[in-house]
Length: 278
Image 1 (cartoon, helix red, strand yellow):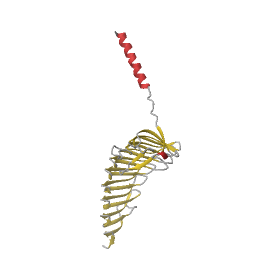
Image 2: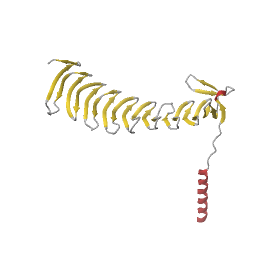
Image 3: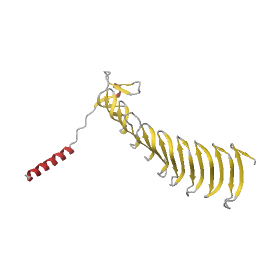
């Protein structure tokens, strides 16, 4: 009985392994020339293909172009499924379509074969998830953005386009608008600017640093305008202190002696961005 069980087990393993190794033959496309087809756009902007009998294409086709070809599955004349375009023997596009609108993976390529864009669309033809954009020069990643239902939502990272490969900015988005912290970096590394957005406007503390990590400038924003105290620094020491009101200089402006800590060098007064006598 045990022997029979072992024989059955070995047989099942063999058949399972064989089944996994079987490669389904790929469907052969029907070949057509684009010059023999009629292309139309409906009022929704969807491209539709018709054969010489003016019947919409249905099935898997390879359409010959002047300098390449398209391989795609059609339904009622619309691209429906994976779309592949080759130009001059180089892959140009790999796209998932639903009724001639992108609805899944979308990849485009440069002439040298390197990837240009890598993004995804949801079933409503809206950008969804991460969108990656690459350099045509060296293939480096230039921008990585998170999308939700067609609008930026989450972190967008921008990279330097030449020189050392490093992060240039990080920006937070909520439903298409800048909202939250944004940071900017030196190419060699280290924070340069930290600031905050609220509903697409600078709002809150803005700090700018030098390459040594020392403060150069610090100010508060309210709805996109300077508002409150602004400090300027020289070699890590407080140099100038000034005050803003809704984007205009207003109040005391003080310059400090950098050689003698806490000693005032000069004082000015402003009202509505104009210097006044006191």
